[in-house]
Image 1 (cartoon, rainbow, N blue to C red):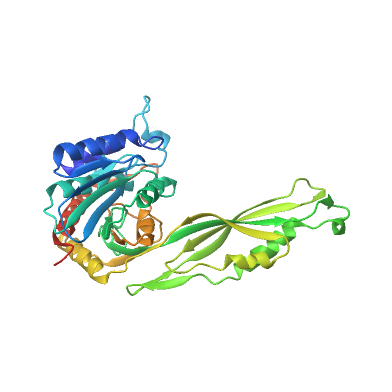
Image 2: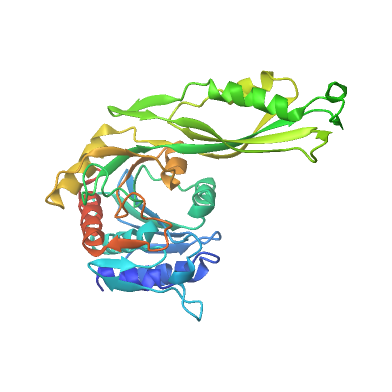
Length: 359
């Protein structure tokens, strides 16, 4: 079976509301076509292992997808999948069933240098719940190549090696006041005024920044929503402010400073960790494999988006990201992936599996 055929089969399986059918397909395929020991855990993650060694290398993907656009579903509720102009179109083609298929075939064909692990997680699009659950159960590879998008960063069509990515911390500032009639504003405490004072604190914060293997990374902090008030003639007693922070490894913006404003509290609603590869030799070895698999010259790059690599890195796995998706491709109504780049990723994964860990 070719990687293109396998990608088509995977993309055709709906997996936005329920990943179980896709997970069952992956597990059964691995049992039938590989020599690996295959386990589908209680969370729905599919994990396969083969080879031996002191160090382990994981090829990492996920088989859940975001809800499809109406144009990506037919009248029977099945996903629409089609090839044209050298690309495969369909929900999940780029993010990231193409690279799941590439990893499955690389796992089948590689003669690994150490223990080789294939894993496809559930719940990546829900904040990495499948990856977190696996880590809690003891999943701890030494190294990982995560198949999220890394094509087109240094140059169009080039599949690069991402050595770091940003995380996301979403939080809420809650301003409490006291209601009063708007004709007597001094009789109350205006929660919106308190909230805007807190917003001024946020606006004055420096963006977090760091360096990973010589690459500069800068985060960002932005107020994205504000909600308060109950009527035109009532002094508001409550106002909430949503803050989106893009985090970098080892750094966070000091958003707790907003709590210095009277009546304001700060809570964290989501904290997706950033990722930084801590092993330069591993990052270089993967870059060598990527260079050998294509005519163009790939580079080490950084990604703006959080992935399961953040959870793995936080747990102690050295990660890089190599995948077929291009910037802006995932989650779109016309999502597609290059067939040639899927083939390239399969080649890269097999090369890495056979050369790392190095002796």
